[in-house]
Image 1 (spheres, rainbow, N blue to C red):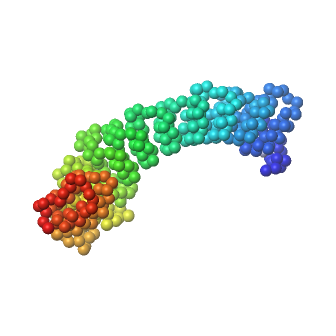
Image 2 (image 1 turned 90 degrees about the horizontal axis):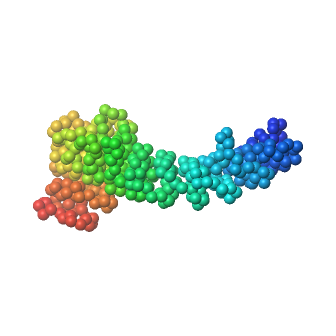
Image 3 (image 1 turned 90 degrees about the vertical axis):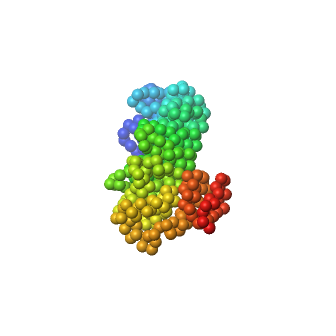
Length: 414
Ligand SMILES: [Zn+2]
C-alpha cells in the first residue's frame, strides 16, 4: 500500500488515534511515517512516549511485529502496565501471535507469574506455538491448563500439556468424563492413550453408560473408542442394575434424534459381549430381556424416517446368535403384533425360524468376523457354539479365524 494515500495519514484526528489505528491495522509504513511526524512535533517527551506505548501495545496484541520494532525504536515503554490497557503479552498469547511474544521476550524480562498467566491464555486459545515459546522461557503448567484444553477441545494443546506434565489418574479420569460429556472423540482418544480409565465411574454412572446415555444421539465413534480401550460393557454402574450397556435404548416414547444409531449401537454392544441375561439393554430388569431389545428396535425403527429394514434384519440375526433362537420364538409367540411387522418387513423370510437360523448366522458372519479380528469375544463364540448349528456351518463361521481355545462342539450334526 502506498503510505501517502493511506487514510491513517490523512486523518485530522489526533496523532495518538492515528498511530493506534495504524498499529492495529498493521500498516507498518504508516506507523513509521506517523512516528517520524510525531517525533518532529513540539510536545513533551512524556506525551510522545505515551502515544508510542499505546500504539506498541496495540501492535503487540494484533501481532504486527514490524510496527512493534519501530515503536520501540521511538521510545515505546515495553514495561508499561496499566489496568486500563491490555497486558501485551497476555493479549498476544490469547490471540496466538507467536512473533509478538518472541519479540516481547527478547526485549524484556517477565516474572514467572506473568509467563504462566500468558501460558494459560495461550492454552485457552489453543495456540501451541505460543505455549511452546513460553515454556522455553520458563512458564510453568498449572492444573487449570488441562481442564481448559479439554473444555475447549484443543487437541494439540492437550498433547503438549500431557507431554510436559505428569497428571494424576484422578485428574485424567475427570478430564475423560468431561470429554465424554462433550462428545469430543479426539480428546477422549488422547486421554485414553494417556491411560485415563475407560471404566471410570463418576456420579452415578460409568464412562460408557455416560457415553451411551446421550438422548439418543449416540456417537458410535465415541463408544467404539471406549470399547477399544477396554471399557467393559458389563461393568456395573453405581445405580443398582445398571451396566455399561444400560440405557442404550431408553423409553421408546422418547424422541430419538437418530434412530438408525440405536440398532448399530445395540449390535455393537452385543458383539462386545453385553450380558443380556443380567439386565436388558433398555435399562430395566425384565424376564424377556433380549426380546425387549428387538421389539423396541422394531417399534423405534418403524417410525424413523431413515428406516432401514436390512439393519433391523441384522439386529434380529445378531440377537438370535447372542441370545439363542428362542428369542425369535418369543417375539413370534408373545408379541403377535410385532411379529406381523417382522413378517411384513421380510415377506420372503421363512417364518419357521429354526430352519432359517443357520442362514441368519451366515448373514451376520461378517459382523462376528470383524469383531473377532479386532477383539476376541468369548461370550459370543460360546453363544454361537450353543446354537447346535450343522458342523459345516460352524466350520464356515469359524473358518480361518485361528481363535485359540475354540473348537467346534462334537455334538453338532454334520
Ligand atoms: Zn495506513
